[in-house]
Image 1: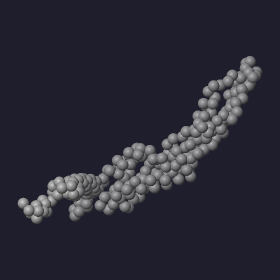
Image 2: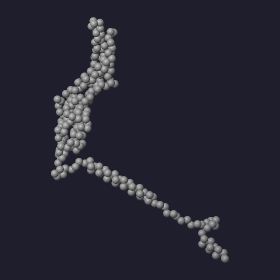
Image 3: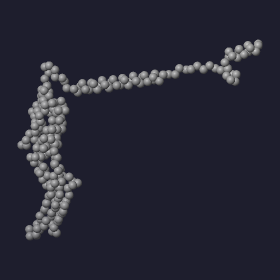
Image 4: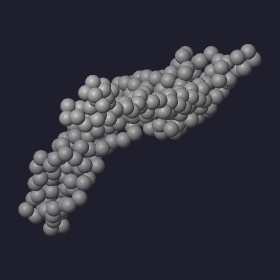
Length: 239
């Protein structure tokens, strides 16, 4: 074999710089990043559709029935039930201060000697006025769903609760005579007297008027939230 033929054979067989025949490398196809995302996107779309359908079903079920031709809704009791669930509508709260000067006079030696056990109590009370909605009757509520109209007559305002603020109520002074016996129930009695006096002081015509106006506004807002537009709320006067 001549030198020229040997050179042609070397040119036909590819080799690296060291004379070792090179191996041809084939590129493997890489998976597309979008291929893995397709099932996830489809799942998200399906979940979104289910949520939208459930929300639409809930809205459709909660919506009131349309007033079509020949359909008239009268005397619906739903308003009365909603108001009864509140039971006690607290509409006005008053802070009252009362000083109670209470003495327990005692006699000694066949009423010849008088002894005294005295207490001065500074009381701070809170009185809550409102309406007892449990006394609301169906006859007190007139409604027309077709006209979106409601007329409600609430019971009279009353004292719902009266309590003393124990953190602010204190005994200012306590004096027990030399011959007197200390009455352990004197402070408890003074507190009961203060609570009754605070309730009586807060139960005034002006306080009742303010409580009635506040209760009427609250009930009117509640009934309007039920879908009624023409709402009239009255509070009965005290008997």
